[in-house]
Image: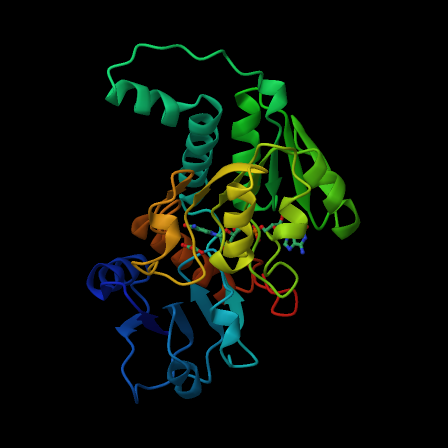
Length: 306
Ligand code: NDP
Ligand code: OXD
């Protein structure tokens, strides 16, 4: 079995070593133009040339959860596309989102500003029930995030395409329930995949439906958010602020207003990183199961877009 590795922006050495150790029966190589056809590919942001040449692939294993960029390429029609599911990302995402929600709810920004002024001042405790959190997307990451938020006793709403029953989470299903979900939420967490249906979903019309003093946490993809609309709603006072990990254009341009906006907290697309060892173990396990004809988790439906 031949496996071709083509991951832009990733140091290949440790991946190749890890994949060879996990799959000693396989020939694992870093892709080079003109290389012989492989059976499986391990990819992140590969060039179109990779798939034009590697057109006999049976499996394409993405070393991330999101496949929006991959699905924009012309892929070999017979290949099964498989994404990472969890592989250590859900715990990181839950940490990141709970931190952002609690930081906002407990007014840590304001306390930090006071401390810098050597001011010992208390703020009135806020009522948790006034901060219902809405989680958009109840997949691998969204479910973990929603459950963790519920452990802190926040009222939690969840929105997904198909109905979900999650302890401590009020479920909203499908496009028809979206306005009601927004109206019931004050803090909004986006964990949707980027698809034609979800692009620009965080825009004036939808964000205006959040309860007054709304707060936006976008950890999915930059193209979900219409940035000018967010800025306008924060500046008008309808939204209290945002924590953003992903942007329409990455890295964020040096002149972008998000860098210095006092109510926007940004991080450089780091909320849930691909962990190499966990990912290698998951991909190797899936390749073996796939070869045995067994079902595997994380198969992407190209028509659905995730
Ligand atoms: P999943 O595919 O497991 O979950 C996606 C969820 O979104 C599902 O609940 C799905 O509904 C729901 N959904 C999809 N389309 C719609 C729609 N049109 N309306 C309502 N709900 C919809 O993905 P993951 O949880 O693994 O990952 C989510 C996204 O997080 C990734 O696609 C990626 O973009 C982003 N991500 C960001 C990272 C970062 O570092 N910032 C790291 C990792 C991922 P249903 O359950 O009914 O199918
Ligand atoms: C992913 C990401 O999709 O890191 O895994 O954004």
